[in-house]
Length: 366
Image 1 (spheres, rainbow, N blue to C red):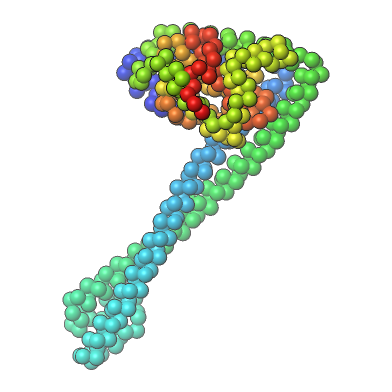
Image 2: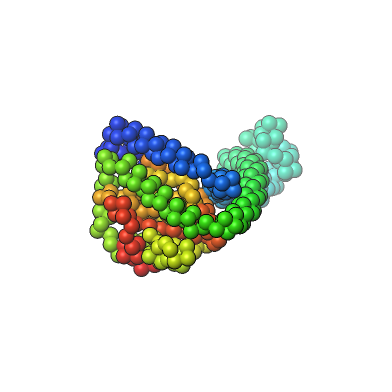
C-alpha cells in the first residue's frame, strides 16, 4: 500500500524487521485492550469509520480503473473511426482500378469484382490474379487486412464497454455503501455526542484520549528505538520552515489553542479541508502506526529518524500500513470526519523525542 517495504531496505536487518512487527503487534494488542471499556456507541463508531476507510479506498481504486477503461475505450473508438475511413478510401480506390481494368480488358471476371463482395470471398471464388495487376492485388489484400483489423477493433470496443459498465456498476454499489455508512456514522456520532453531554464527561473523555495518545507515542518510540533511521534524504531537522503542508486547507486551531472548556491545549494544528482531500507525508520516513484511535479517528504516525515523528489524524481512509516507507509528498490518507469532527479535517503534529513541538515552525508557506 505504501512505498517500498521494510524488507527491501539494506540498512534494516530481518531480525530488526521482525522485532518491529512484533512490537507493533504488541501496540495493537495494547490498543485493543485499552478500548475494551468504550461504550457500545463508541465501538459502533469505530467500526463504521473503519468500514468507511475501506469503502473509500475501494471507491478510489474503482474510479482509477474506470478512468483507464474510459481512456482505452476512447482510443479504441478513434482507431475504429480511422480504420473505417481507411477502409472506405481503399474501397473507392479498388473500385476505380477495377473499373478501369474492366473497361480496358472487358474481362468477365472483373464484372464480378465490381459487386462489392468482401475481398475474402472474392479471393475464394475467383482466380482474379490473371486479370489484375500486382498493385491492384496488393491493394485488395491490404483492404482485407484493414477489414479484419476493423472487426477486431469493434470487438475490443464492445469488450471494453462491457468492462466499463461492470466497473461503473461496482463503483455505484460502493458509493451507495459509502453513503449508507456515512449516514450510519452521522447517526451514531449524534447519539454518542448526546450520550457524552448527558453524562457530562466530555472533558474527562478528551483528557483520557490525549493521555492514551501520549502513551501510544511512547510505545511507538520504544518500538523504533533500535531500528536504523531513514537516511535517503536530508535529515528532518534540516527542514525547519521548509516542510510542505500535509494537506490543502484552512487552519482552524493552532498549536497551543485551548479546548474542552479551556482545560486542555492542542499539541498540533487542526485544518479544515475539502471532502476526501489528499493527506501527504511531509518528509521521507517509515510508517509506524496506521489505525483507528479514539478522539483522533484514523491516524498515521511516521518516523523520520533522529527522534522526529509526524502524526496525521481524522482521516477517512488510510493508504499505508506499519512498516511501509513513504516519500515526501506521497499520499498516505484522505481527510475525513473520523474521531468526532463535524467537518472534513486533518490533525497534524510534529514530535521530537516524544515531545510535541509547534508544527508551524517546521512548515513552509502554505
